[in-house]
Length: 133
Image (cartoon, rainbow, N blue to C red; front, side, top):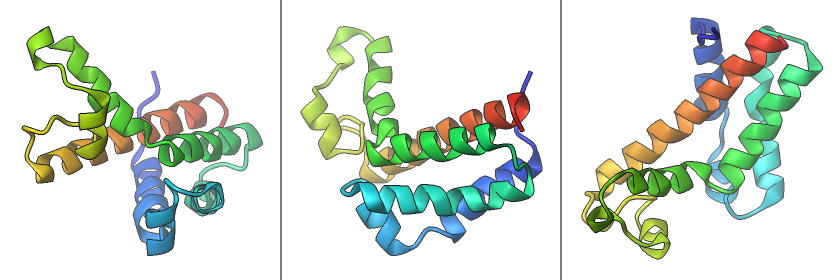
């Protein structure tokens, strides 16, 4: 079983928060170059944990895909199909409210999005480092 270590969590936090410029944060969902620069910079702290090219490629590549196309927002929307149909809402509504319904307070929809995004990154990183790193 692969469980994230404190070193992996630290690398994630440093890469995704400390080393991410405002330009990267604002443009990564609009432009491939910003998403790629962010993904490469994000991966730098992981070089202290592994030099395995497959693990680093998985970490960089999946970070690019998750951030560029805001996959956390897709998951936030899709998870609601686990509810009764009366609770379902449209993708248009989800896009306007960070993946949540219009009834979800904005602060909560943003935090849910951040939590889902971090869960995706941390889980994939742990997998890559466990199996290849």
